[in-house]
Length: 521
Image (cartoon, one colour):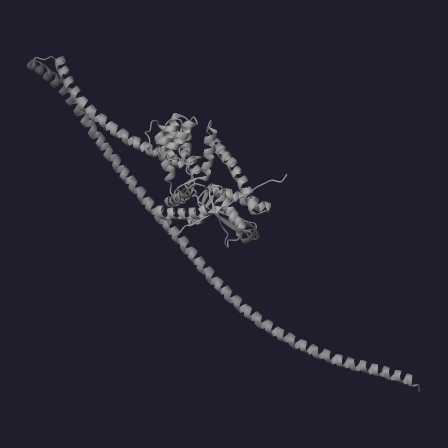
């Protein structure tokens, strides 16, 4: 036989044998897997039965507990309802007893009233009889007196009238004094009533001015741009605005610290513009701050105009309107000056209306009473006298001028609205939480610190920052040399040390900058 054919036959036979053996092995494995699966299924069934039994027992326990709770709640509800029913029945019985008692008392009272009526009727009859007898006796008595005194009835009447006249005058004087005292008491009560009603009708929320403004950022990445390389940007902002920038771990926020609300507002608006523009460097900072200052001046005028329109005050001079707007950025003892002045104006108008006076004139005086706290230039006069001087200068009514000058008793009150303005100013400032004495003392100390530095020649600006622990003095380069800067810093520090009382230490920094500017054309 051909070897190739033989090899093919052997291969086929081997393949068939392999197939048969493979089928046998597969069948054996399949049977084994089936047996394992049956065992696993039996195990799962047993576990399921155990689990089902456990769940059934748990549910039975839960059902029993639930039944016990529901039964307890039901018993409690039934008990409370029964208690309420018993209380109601007791109240009804008490009311019935009370009604029965009242009916018995009423019947008794009716009987007593009838007995009293009968007694009164008898007494009236007796009085009428006695009156007739008395008239007869009186006529007889008059005839006897005329005979004895040799006076007629008319003459006796004249003497009696004169005697009674003097007695009546004495009694009238005493009654007059009683009426005056009673009128004073009623006047005091009425005044207190008017003040209380005025306060209630013009009740307002109080907001204490703080020395910190929070500037919110879109992300913390902008903090790096604001700080700048080696902190040059933040130093430029602080030097231009006089506001202390606090960059801490607060997420997406920078704190602006300054005792002057106007400086904080300028710094806030400037930062807002710089962040929106994205170009933050010292030259741009100075440009934006200067533009913002001009914008603030326009905003001040808008605030003043809006305030006088809302209050219904007309014919106010533009300079006074501008000063009213400046009140928005001024605080007194922690109380915003514009809020205080508006509240005082409304109080004055209400109180004047209650007293039958001119409410518009009183409102005008109330709004302008602290106008002397926001002058363009510092003055040695008190704010009341300075405010009166400004009001007189810009053509205000004499009553308004007197009310401004007299609201702290520095001049005599000459008009009726003057005490009204004084009272309303005290009411507004005396509200709970309206003012803080400590805040005003701190602000005054900061101002004194800056004014001390400004008293030296060549000083252009002075900013107290770091809550008064650092004083930055900017001098004019043409008037102060580098050697003079060192001397000036030392002199200011010595003067602060000798003339002021302060906690800790104060760092005095004198900044002198020389700029040479030329334009290539």
